[in-house]
Amino acid sequence: MENEANISQQAATPFTMDDFAAALEKHDYQFQKGQVVKGKVFQIDPDGAYADIGGKSSAFIPRHEAALREVIDLSEVLPLHEELEFVIVQEQNAEGQVTVSRRQLEMRQIWDKLLEMQETTKSVDVQVMNTNKGGVTVNLLGLRGFIPRSHLLERNNLEALKGQKLTVSFLEVNRDTNKLVLSQRLAKSSASFSLLEIGQLAEGKITGIKPFGVFVDLNGVSALLHIKQISQKFIENLEKVFQPDQEIKALIIDIDEGKGRVALSTRVLENFPGEMLESIEEVMTSAEARAERARKKLLESANA
Image (cartoon, rainbow, N blue to C red; front, side, top):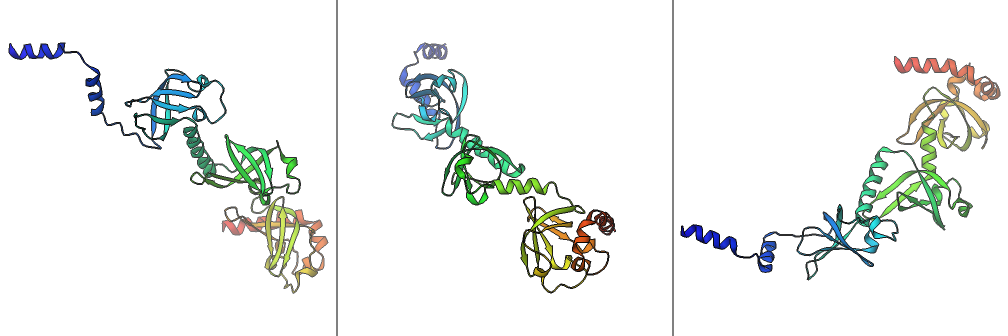
């Protein structure tokens, strides 16, 4: 009976604020910067909002940390009494209050998305926001990206690119340094690569003549016509055979998109050794028919 009386007396004892504080002490809320927490906004003020995240004190969301975009009405992005995720940007102060952010959580999620896109996507569309001496700045998923001048197709009049949409590929996605570098040239090259295949007769323009061969531009893709693949006959001087900007047709014999390499051959188009040196115009004029014959031999040897 005595035990029952003690239990009854304890149950009747009021739960004071000191008891509440002691109970909270038993829960070790060690909030750390960078930690993602869940909470519900219960108050919105002109300079920010307050949320309950389960700690001793409320969490504060500064107005500029409410969203990645500029917000006039905070209730649009911080609806009252709805559970939201936040990232802690400042640990507990003397009153136990932490500062949290939705903006930085959004940025973290966007960087995750960009890293995924870099691995799985060949190209994306961006809008040019501004220009500087080094290139142009663009908007991608709300983040600022940069395209160096050397990676633009139009390099002379950058001002004309303002407001335009460009198709680009990723050069660098670095969350730690906040660097997002993109390339329009690489995107065009990737798109052109997808149109090429081994055994295809390609037409392009000679962009460079070297002792070991000639470089040919195939709609943005640089291909090599090696000196050994030009003719079945030995060639002493390529500059006596070709000229810069000369249009040429050749068969694609190898593609390595990972290394950005395409190998060409006109040797396989010859009807006899040295025909490319003696009658290059004849070879080019009937290149389609010659290519069909050469393609069959190429595929037969590949399947052998």
